Length: 297
Image (cartoon, rainbow, N blue to C red; front, top):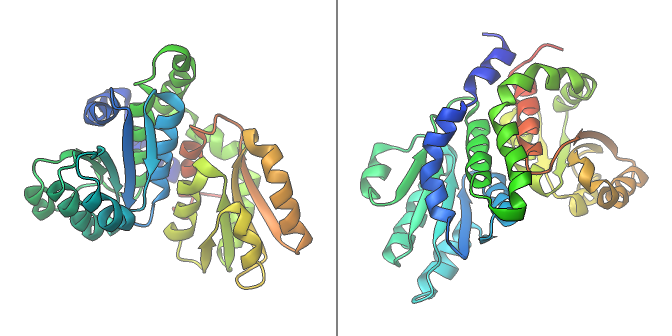
C-alpha cells in the first residue's frame, strides 16, 4: 500500500474518535487538578496532553515523570490524592505495571490511554479506566489524534472557538495528508539526507512528540533529542546537523536559539508548521511518518 494511503487509513474517523473519547473526557471533566504522566520513550505524548488540557479547559494539569510519581509523590500524598492520566506506548508497559501497582495501592483514580495492553496487565488492573488504541506502525499518530480530539471536546465558554478549530482539524487530517506532504516536500527531502548521519533533533514545547518519533522511529543513524536551550551543548559532541520542529507562533522566542546554533557552526533544517501549536504536532507526526516509512521523494 502506498505510504500516503497507509497514513490516511490509520487515522480515526470522527465516529471512532467520539466513541473512544468518552473515558478520557470523564477523567478530566469537572476536575480542578489532574496529574499526567507517560511511560515509554514517547513522553512528549503525555506533555502534549497536559498542554491541551491547560490551554483548552478549566482544569489544571501537571506533567510528572513516571518514576517521580511512583516513588516520590504517590506514596506520600495521602488525603490529597489527585487523579492521574497515564499515556503509554508498548515499550513502556513494564514501567506502566509498576506505576499502576503503586497508584492503585495508594488510592489514586487512574485512567490509561495506550496501545493494546497485554492481557496479564489488563487482568491485574481491571478496575483502572482504560482507553486502548489499536497499535500498529502509526500508533503514535492515532494516540495523539485521540488526545487532541478528546480534550478539545471538553472546552466551554471563551475557549470553545479555538477548541472547535482543533476538533475540525483532528477530523479532517485524512483530507490534507497529500497536500501537507507536497507543501513540505523540500524540507522532507533535506530531512532524508540528514537521517543517514548523526544529528540532533530539537523542538518547541508541543512538538516534542514529533521530535521523539523522528529520533527513535528511524534507525538509520545516531540521533539525540534535546530541547532548544541545550542544543548547543551537542554540536561538538554529536553533530552540527540539527532538525528543529517549530511553529510560527514561537518565531520570536526561537530567534535567539537558532542564531546561537548558527554561530557555533550548526546547520539547521527547520520544519516549521504554520498552524495552531495545539494541532501542529499532528501534522508533524504525519510528515515524520511519511519520511521514516519511505515515502517517495
